[in-house]
Length: 487
Ligand SMILES: Cc1ncc(COP(=O)(O)O)c(C=O)c1O
Image 1 (cartoon, rainbow, N blue to C red):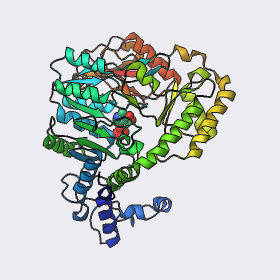
Image 2 (cartoon, protein in one colour; image 1 turned 120 degrees about the vertical axis):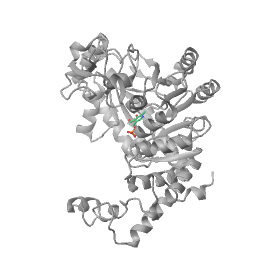
Image 3 (cartoon, rainbow, N blue to C red; image 1 turned 90 degrees about the vertical axis):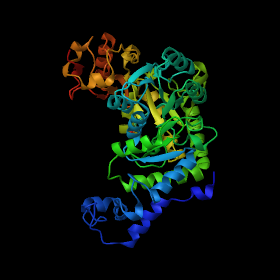
Image 4 (cartoon, rainbow, N blue to C red; image 1 turned 90 degrees about the horizontal axis):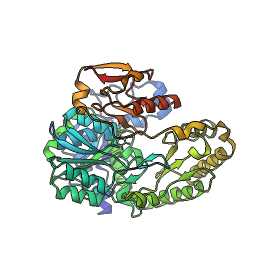
């Protein structure tokens, strides 16, 4: 890669130049470079940010039809990541997942989907009407953690479904667990399937040799990355990367025009331009430090009685692909507290906020923005909690099961979502067909997908999660009712 070229930030430079020219604006945004913004807002963030809150103008190009600096910035991203074409996204990886599915599928296309997909993947399937064939991810019953799908399971599903045209996987998952990308992609291609990867958690992988192989390096056709989750993008700023051998890039370009706003935030897009520059030119150095911090913390956390933080051994145990070691999945169930309780304690007592919690774990994302002192504070807070707080002991933690990802399917997600629906109490819902995407959020992996039959076990699981105070998306506001197909 030509690092001098990667130092360029054409979009950001054009924005700064336009802001500094102080032209009189009779266009949107209505705050006119901050002159019309509320004083409270300006007082807190300062003036400058408003001067680069621009709109589509000749000087700064158009995301809908890029032919200037946005085109150049996207081309630099494609070069840095090794794509044929890269696209800036301003509605997160969610819109990228929608666009990938709308591009690669027709209504009724059979798509093999790892069941640990984010809800936006199900939304994409609803939009197009494609038929998912779900593959169950491996689950570690001791850790009580859903991992990822294996090559063997994907291969068997491809063999059993010769009509499938598309394979959709999530790698890394939220916990950094990757599938065996190279083996799976090359097998799927051999069998004629296009491969799409939700790589929300992997925009950094390409830039350090000690991190797992990236989807593009492994030969994927399309992937989406949440630049905002892991590296320097601002919230909502993601990228979609594509290659045209098995995917029609003209259709993809048109679909993105359909699903993205006509008023993209230039601040978000500039953050993509700058995040790409930073990771392409300084990534190795920054990530070396990140990896070191994460590994030091993992070692220390594993010395705390009752608390564990798994490492790459888990990959070999389940024949998966690799582990992104910058993610720390911290299992707390053996100190007798739920992940929710530990997360709450860290927040209220120690001023530490983690990425997410579930009944058994907390998840810590270590990134290029972390400092050694931050991790020291985390380790010492966990040591403290392990010793002093376990009188809160929740004896029933071990009774809580993981969601079972083998619900029976009665109809496609689209059929169920758009069919006549009604709400019933959770107790009444067993045996009925779910019409909503039900997720415990985060991680946003649906425990029920529209079209799946709600089992007695799922009713129990939902009730237990509600009792634990989990955030459940897709139920009614009071968490008492669930949407079903009214047949
Ligand atoms: C695996 C995965 N895919 C997609 C998404 C959605 O990404 P975004 O929030 O950027 O829309 C998430 C968000 O948590 C995720 O974890």
